[in-house]
Image (cartoon, rainbow, N blue to C red; front, side, top):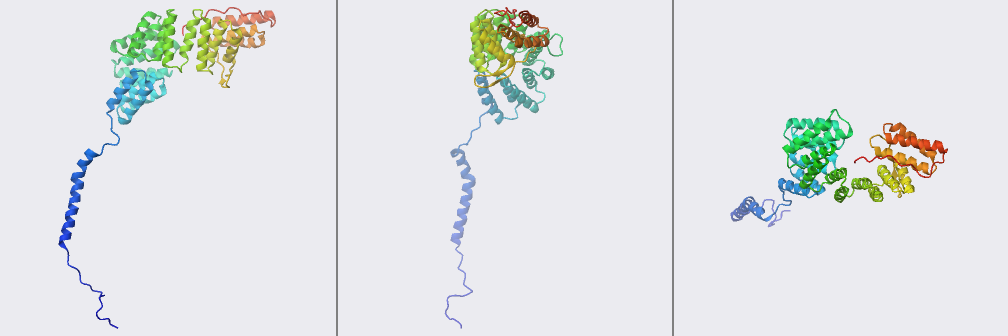
Length: 423
C-alpha cells in the first residue's frame, strides 16, 4: 500500500543556515578567549593573595641570632631549621645551627649539621671548626684534632677555630690523653691567638678563661669568663666555670651565686647542685653541703655518683646511718624509693672521690660490726686504685681494725685523710 500525502519521508529538505547566529557565536567565543588570556591574570594579581607568603631567609637568621642572644637556644634552633627549609643549599646556616646546638648540649645534632655544611662546601673552615668542637665535646679527641688542623690549614686567621683548638688541648691535658707532650702550653698559645684574632668572640674569651684556670691563673680567668658572659649571659656552662674559679679563689659566696645562675638557666642539670655541695663542704658547712647534694639526687635519682657525694657529706655532718644508706647505693647499686634501678658506681682511678665513697662506706660498715662486708671493699681498693695513697692508707687501716678486734671494732670510725680536689 502506498500512503499518499504522508509527512514522513526519508529525504527531508535542509533548512537554510542562519549566518547571524554563527557570527554571534564566533564573537562570543573570541570574547571569552580574550577575557581569559588578557583580563583574568591581572585580576588574580590583585584579588588572589599568596596562600603561604615566603619569608626572606635572612630574616630567619636575624631572628635566630636574637633568640640565641636571649638564651632561647631551643627556639633559635627551630628558627635556623626553618631557614634551612627555605634555603637548603646555604652551608652558613648549617654551621650557625650546629654552633647553637653545641651550646644547647646537642652534640650529635651539631656534628650532623656541621657535616651537612661540609657536603655543600668541603673547604668551609668554619664548618670544620664547629665539627671539631662537637667532636671534642663528645670526647672524640683524635677525630677533633684531625678536623681542627684541617680547619686551620684552610683559614689560619679563623679566631674561633683557634679557640676550639685551645678547648681541645685543654681537655687533652685534663684527661691526660693525646699525642702531645705538653698540650697545655700549646693551649695557652692558641687561646691568646684566638682572642687576638676574634676579640669579640664569646668562644675566644671562654677558651682563654678555661686555659687560665687550668694553669692556676684564677684572677685572670675570672676576667675572661666575665668578658664571655658579657657577650651572652645565658650560657649555663660559663657560669659553672666562673663559679669553679671563684671556689679556687676561696670566694665561696661568689661561687654559689654563679652556680645558682647556672641552675636557673638549666634546672634539669644536676651539676650546679653538685658543685655547690663541694663549695660549701670545703668551708665546713656540711649540713648545707648535704642539702645541695640531696637536691642533685632529686634531679638524677639513679645516678650512683651523686648518691656517693650525698653519702660523703652526710658522713661529714655526722649522719652516719643515712650516709651508710646512700654510700651502699653508690657502691653496690640498688633501687630508688619508687623502684628505679641504681647501678653501682664502678671504682676507677679517674676520680679520687669514687675511692672516697668506697673507703668511707667500708669505715661505716666497720662501725656497724660488719667487717665481713667491709674487708672485700678494702681489697677492691687495694687492687683497683693502688696509686691512691689515701685509699690505700684507709683500706689497710680498716683491715687492721678488723684483725685487731676480731670483728668488734671501736664505736666510731677514724678521721679520714684530707682530699678536696677542685671540681
